[in-house]
Image (tube, rainbow, N blue to C red; front, top):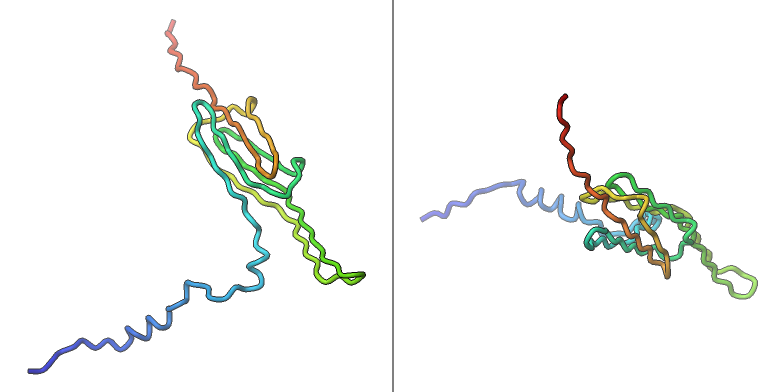
Length: 142
C-alpha cells in the first residue's frame, strides 16, 4: 500500500521567514531614549476618585494637572542629570530632559473646583470628587 502525503513546498519556508519578525531580539540604541512613562492607580471611593501616580525626581512646580469634564491629564517636566567624576576627569555624564504625560477618562464628570492634589516622596495623590448629578426638572406649559 502507498502512503499519500500532502506536499506544500512553501509552508516551512514562510514559517522560517517570519519567525522572530515580530519579536525584537536586539535592543537598538534609540530604544533607551524613549520617553519614560509613570505608573498610576485609580480607585473609586464613594463619591470620589483617588489617583496615585508615581512621578519620582520631579519638583511639584513642574507638574501640571488638567481636568475637563470627565477627562484628566497629568504631565510633568522631567530633568535628570548624573555625572561621575574621578579626579578632574569626567568619566560618565548622562542627562535627560523631557516631558512625561498620561491622560484618562473616568465614568462620571468631575467637580474641578473641589479637586485636590498632593505631592510627597515622588507620589502624586489626586482626590477628584464626582460632580453632583442634577435632577431633571419638568416644566409646565402655560
